[in-house]
Structure formats: C-alpha cells, structure tokens
Length: 449
Image 1 (cartoon, rainbow, N blue to C red):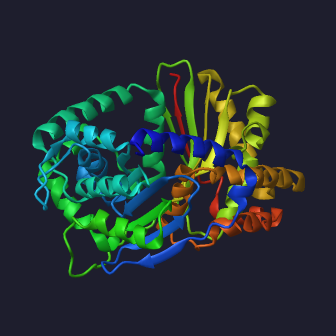
Image 2 (image 1 turned 180 degrees about the vertical axis):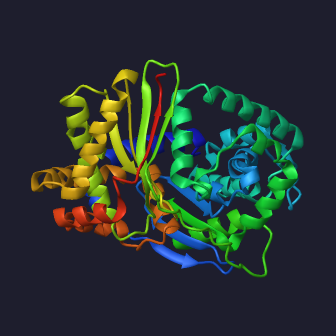
C-alpha cells in the first residue's frame, strides 16, 4: 500500500534529483498549453512528471487597485478572510471553521493559500498528484474559492489584529517612508491608497460578500497549472476549482482604471524622526509590465542598482564614499506603471550628501547608459542565473502565472535568453531616457530633526 508518507518521501527525494540536474533541465523547452473553458476561464498548463506534485495558481483582477478609496484594504481583508472558514457546501458538506480547514489540509498533506496584491487576488494550491489525494485537495480548494463564509465574529477579531499591526508599523521609519513615497508617486491612483483604521472601519462582511460576488467569477479566472497531470486532468482540476462560484450570463469588462499620471515636477519631503538611520526613497512612476522596453530596463537597472555590489550606485555611494551599507534601485511593473525606486539607509547627518550623490549617479546613467563592459557583466549574470528561476515547480508556477496574467507570449521563457542577449547599450540608454526624468522625481527622507 502506498501511504501519503511514502508519497511525500518520494517527492522529497525526486526534488533533490531534479535540482541536481542543473542547467540542462531548466534550459529545456517549456511548452505551455493554453486553452479557454466554456465558462470563459483561461488555462495555462506545463505538464511535467519530474515530481509527483501539482501546483495550481488561480488569479482574478481583484487586487487592491480595485478597492473603493473609502474602503482601502478590502482586497487584502477578503484574501485573509477566505481562509477563515467555509459555509455548508452545495453538495451537503458541513461548514468548516479555520481550525477544521487547517486540519483538513494537514490530513491531505497539501497546502492552500490566498493573497491579494495591487493587481490580482491569487489562490495557490499545492498537492501530490496521487489521483485520490489530488481529487480531495481540489474539492476542498473549490470550497474555499466558491463557498467562503466570511464570519462576522472572526472579522471583528481580524480587524483588531490588523489595527494593532497598523499602529505598530506607524512607529517604524521604513513604513512611514514607504507610505509617503507611494502617495507622492501615485497621487490619487489606487496604487497609492493607504489602509488605515478608518478605511477598515468601513469594511464589513456584507461588503466582502458583495465585492467577492462582483469580481471572483469563472469567466475572469486565469488558471496556471504545473505538474504531473495530463491536459484532460488539468481541465478537470480547473473545472472543479471554479465549480462552486456562481455562473454568470455575461462577462462584461471591469471598469477601466486611469493610468498612473507622470509627475509634473519634483517633490521633496523631509519627515523628522528620532532614529539612528534615515530612510531614503527616490523615484517616480515607472512602466507597465507589457511595455516593450522591459528587457532593456531590466538589464539597465542591473547595472544601475539592481546588481548588488557590482552596481554603479553601490560603487559610488557605498564603496567610494561610505555613505550607506546597502543601496538598490528597481522597477515594479504591474498592469499599471509601478514605481521606479532607489532606496537606502544612512546616518541622518549624511542624508543630504547621499541623496545628492544618488541623484547624480542616476542622472548620469540616464544620460549616458551603460558601458559595454557593464552590459556584458549584466548579461552574464542575469542569463547565467536564469535557469535558477525555473528549477522547481514552485518557481515555475510563478513564471507561468505571470505569463498568463500579463498575456505574454507562450514561448516567453524559451525566448527570454535570446531577447535579453539582443539588448544593446543604445537600447538601454534610449529606454531609460523614455521612462525616467531625473529632474522630476520624488525624494522622501525619514529621519533626523
């Protein structure tokens, strides 16, 4: 008899073997099968028998950018409350509270998580591929997706917990700086909305149920599946996962969200705070993920501040001048233009010098772009490390889900290296000139008097 424990042990040993295969496995073609169910849900499948595991991610356009401003935090709250219990099932199953759900998942040796980001709400299932276990795990997940109970008493406790967390975070300079930066960069755009005790007070379980019914519908689902399943099995998994959501006669597009507005002028904000280190953010709106400059911006940012100790910012601000222990830059592209940000900590008495030097490095890079040697080093590192982004089911499901979410080409992972290799220094200079305006950036410094 094959027990759950034996299957789990097989998975562990198989995982070790797969990791040991190294680059060859990760560089092999990764065919993504794609089709649409009758209910409108879009399926993306990578069938692989390397491990007896199945990973599923279900995404909906229900992230925080869809929150009504007076109820900022609604998406995050909904994602947390989905895991707090399910009501009695349509097939006669009993209601389950949070503890009973936890025990049920433990008995299956599977896991299920719900999260909400700025753009999407994601449901993640991981289970062994043994047919009996897979079927039970998918059925249980379908109950959490389609039959959340949103219990009032649990929400009251959860709200108190979140309020306590907000109060604590308001004492931390990093949180204060991040909040001020987001509000300055995004303005009235939903990406800049702040979750407060006041916005949480306007959220009740009725609002959760109403919003859930509006946004979590089968026709808007994107399901990514990676693991030891056939196409027919994957379709069965997807159909079952969505089977308890209410059917819809039509699937009208959700209201359009205005793009993030470009900054009209620079903004400088200094917030006094009694701390040993000043927290500094410099940046502006960046670009949406589907922008054709993505590869050039990714490579260029590695040279500027994304490459750790080999980046220009680290060399100039840390190594040459000792103004900080660590400094970075990065883009955060989403469905809308996520922020570009330079971030670091420094002594309060050094903050202005560090800000000045960081701005100079940034302006010089935007004006001149990378050198050929910098570009080669960036390509060697990023392309050499690419297989490590695909060396497990967990990493692969994330990549496939991103392809699905952003409607990227199905061969995106297979052509990634070629497209990255094709980027020139001139491409990077032109892309940065199009996206960044060093003279119109937000600067936030929290610390000092």
